[in-house]
Image (cartoon, rainbow, N blue to C red; front, side, top):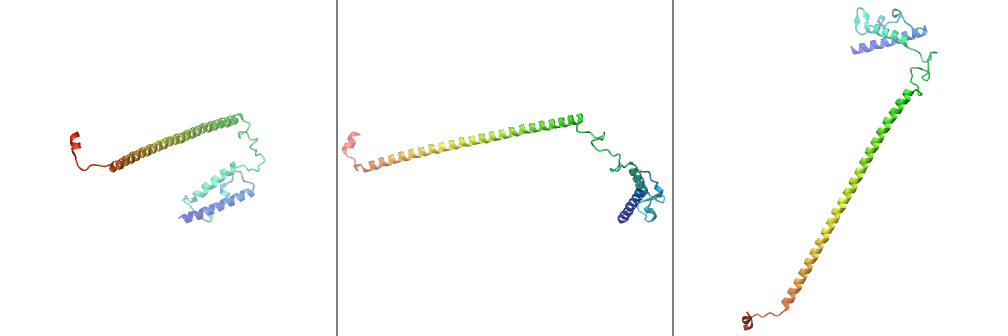
Length: 189
């Protein structure tokens, strides 16, 4: 079914091209053409859905071709007007166009300024955050170093106290001790 439709469409397109070439050679392009005198693919091939013995799609296409050709204007036509002289085209020196352009430019520039201010504020807060974090880190690092220094002093002081105690113990060990309790010790007590 799809292949039949494609083949019929190809025949219709060839028929339309042939009709256009015939109409162009006769100087009928842009004029009302009689649909009855047109070449029809129905004479040689049937395609699409048929209503009442005629090909509905071909007739519809033929009608649209006739109406389309009657409203077309060639670019090489002598009454073609360039865009700079066409009254329907808004010219560059039109005050409304200049006002719209100026308004659009102002809106765009205000958006750019707002975005620039937002970006500058973001970068300022970002740099402030970096500075604050650096200061916090340096403060913590100085506290850590001060604590290490305090701990080192405490350890040194303890080592010196132990060394002094040890030296005192060595001196006391070298002193003579009596091994017996004599009368002089009992009398003084």
